[in-house]
Image: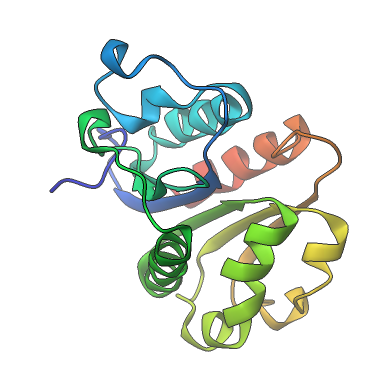
Length: 186
């Protein structure tokens, strides 16, 4: 099964992984084919960012949903089923660990509880297995960000941190900065 959102014609094909949460606002299941088009609301800015990143490589969108568990943007909506969220959380965390080892760019935009369950809980393993010279963008609440030691990543990777305020998963400034760094690496 293909795990991509957008295929790119970029000369250097970067592996880009985006980790986020679904939205309670959704499209009608009959109106869309893929999960990436199913979630609306607060998910849309993340989807738009993934589309822009698609200029630089193959983008996989990993979604943690309270209702459906762990999903990929490339999953078909018809395959959605209620899943034990604990199982979904484990799969989501496992995918994040895999991305840490292999991806050129990792974007993590999560709520406080999802960040602590997915990132903070395995931070030591992430740091010890991280792909050198990768780019990381972390967006979460200040308390979630403070639950990890970001300095452990430097100078191994380039990192952008957005301390989330309100519902915005990433700021315009953070998005612009991420796109500029990825452009420069490409």
